[in-house]
Length: 404
Image (cartoon, rainbow, N blue to C red; front, side, top):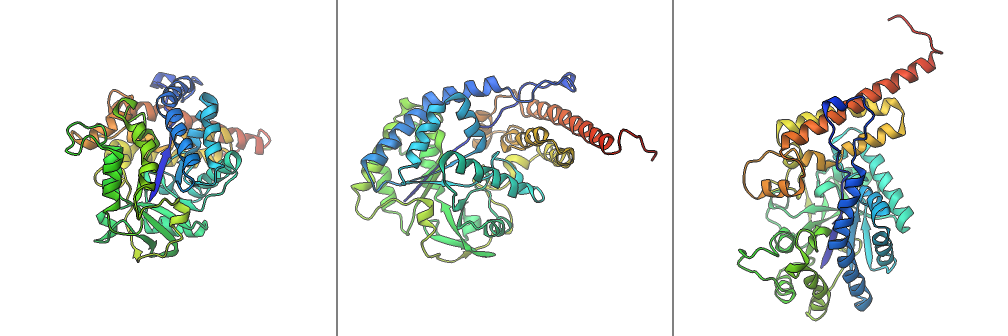
């Protein structure tokens, strides 16, 4: 069994109106973001990490895998440094693996080089600085995966990647084996068992669910009855205390899981780094990008409508200017605007489960509000980039204005 949890909080935007262009107002509402982080720390991060730390100490065979975005680390450092210290302590047990990803939980994997490489390097440097580790397994934003990304992972010398265990990529094969990337056979693939993962991640506290209430004994029984070599349970860390409140019993479930697994014959734990050492069953092809976002498992969560595509195309163009500006602050602000959450808030999908999830995470009144606010901030950054480029040109020409 592989239990992998993802820790991420975006830098949410402040309200930025058209009239604010050129005003010098910050794009990020830092105070509000840190308040949100402190709230989640109290409900989720502290109690869940405390239970995981206890389980790691009590059961030496328990294993855990985590990914932590750079934006989460930044906010933890400022809002709840004790949470970061606890995380560092459990990593030092040697029973926890960390994964690499984009520093900003961004859509950098859809941009031309070198943005993806640079963001992954930024993230690697942050993990080395905070935890003293260099991960061997890569995950992209929301488990995005394609043949092209497997080639990137191979070039970056990763041993494995995480993928959504969806029928569209597995093509009849079960998610309970290790696979390898067809274009990059040195890259092993761990496929998320989405049914078992979503039983906890989405259905745990639903009283309408036929299996409610879910106990650790029932859940581990399902896992033990699942054929294959490895069951990959991948979900958001905020599952434990935030998406499902403590009153649902989710924290007690988390505590009971290692104990119940240990008492069940035939089951054992592995980190992602241990699991990718298993021999692959066969190769997988993914000519189109798949992800764990929404029911279609594609890029529609961020680029499924005209608002999202318009915003992303504009962000790409501003990125060219931000690089030309050669200003680290401008480049950092652009990368914060590249965080996938901003595009996620622009989702327009009518009714249904997907729409409900998008609305849950968004603080905007509508996707159109999210789009307008984002574009105002982006256009302000564009103007700043052009101004900086112009200043550099004047400096290089000694203040002389050249005729064109």
